[in-house]
Image 1 (spheres, rainbow, N blue to C red):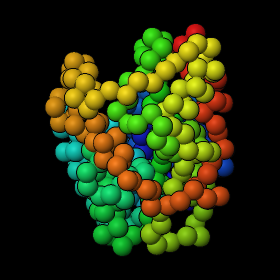
Image 2 (cartoon, rainbow, N blue to C red):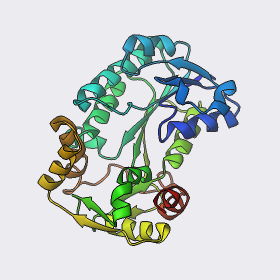
Image 3 (cartoon, rainbow, N blue to C red):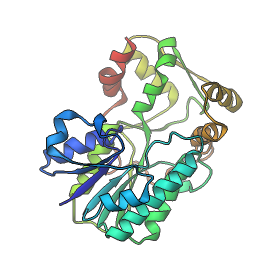
Length: 290
C-alpha cells in the first residue's frame, strides 16, 4: 500500500507519519521544506520536495499512490482564500489524473456551511472539488485544535485571552494527535469507498470559559477570557501586520459559526476522541508558560 502524506511537519501530519511507520508502511511525504522533518524518521520514509500549490509537482509526486492524506497548507500570503484555491486545484488534479483510490482530507467543522465562515470556506471549496470528481474521499470535519492555544502564549502569560465568541458558547475542542489517529486508521483501511464525512469532535464540547478554567489549572496561574468586539479584534490583528483579507478570513471562522450554527454531525462514539484538554495542556502548554 502506497500512502502519501502532506504537511508532514504540521500539527496533525507530524503524528500521522510515525503512526504509519509503526503500522509497517513506508509513507511518501510531500514536504516543501524536507529539512524540517524529524531526522529519526528519514530512513523509514520517502520524501518528495513539493509545494502543494504547484499542481504539476503534486500530480507528479503522487503517481502510483493508493491513498492520500491531504491538508491544505497554511497560507502565508495576504490572500488566504486564493492560496486555498491553488491547493484545491492541485489535489483535485492529482486525484483525477492518478486515479488515487482513497483520499482523507483534513477539513473543519463549519465547512458544511460552504460560505460565510472565513478561511473555512477554503476547506469547503476543497471538499466540493473532491466530491465533484466522484472519487472515494473521507472529509475529517475537525473541531477547534488545542494547539491553537499555542498562538495565545503571550495572552496566557498575561492572564487574559481576548475572544469574539460568546464565552459560554460550547464547541468541539480536539487534540491534533487524535485527528492523526483517525486519519491514519482511515488511510490504512482499504475496505471503504464513496464519500464520507467523519467528524472529529474531541472528548467533550467546551466553552471558552470552561477551557480557560482547565488551562488555569494546568499552567498553575489564572487565565481568563474576555469577549471583545469584532472591530477590536480586527484592529488587534491588523496591528500584528496582517492584511485586511487575512484578518477577515480569521474573523470569519468565528463570526460565521457563532449564530445558530449546529455541526452537520452530532457527537457520537465515532466522532468522540480521547485526549482531554487538561491532559494536552499539562503536557504541552504548561512547560511553555511556566
